[in-house]
Image (cartoon, rainbow, N blue to C red):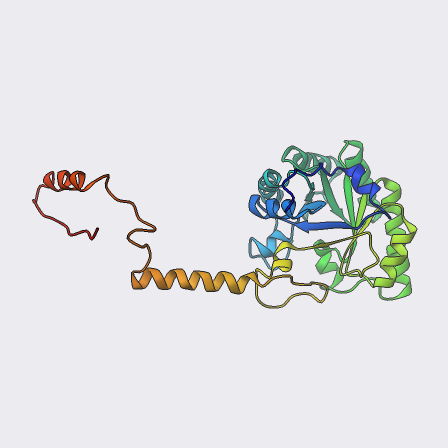
Length: 295
């Protein structure tokens, strides 16, 4: 393990990685997960609104508030010292007005993020992104499956399967590049389409369920580590199955508590300074009783 601190990853550094080195990106939602991701060498740490599902227990991302995101962004910022920290702007944080959108984006920066991520590329969204950029706040775009639009999309489905939809997504990618986004997340789109977009635009593409031809990849922290059992998306590769280890460890702890083997009298316990001090303590007891403590 390299003990030398890494050079801070910046927005220009991410842009410069296009065509030169693959970008590794992970989500993280608090100090320990951000620190682990940072220490592992993640180029970008995204405080994703996916925390609604993997941390807060919501069925989707739509219930996540700006305050939720800022709380977790502040925590993650303390752990991500070298990676570029990106805050995911949640549902309704950039939908009501341009002024409110810019103000909310600024709150992410004040909470420790160095950039924000915004979903979608319709005309009104492009105007909003342009205004955020005008406030000197870097923006990462996101097209394809945009989870905040899950109801409009009819579920978590592959996007761009036919030529017309694919062409629309290509146009959206070009528009996001033109307006000034420094990178672009492509979620759940055909690998062929992701390859075309990656070749056509000059900013890095970061795929999730978009095949191997993107400039980088992102996965959810909890998915990579297998922190939850159950269904995982087709595009997820689990590198550990920590949920099983966690449950086994906690079951062992509870077993030891119940059979009296934890805490151990010597290993995990503290004692009086001496037997003399213990005798003095006994002498102060009003009932004169003595408790037998094995030594």
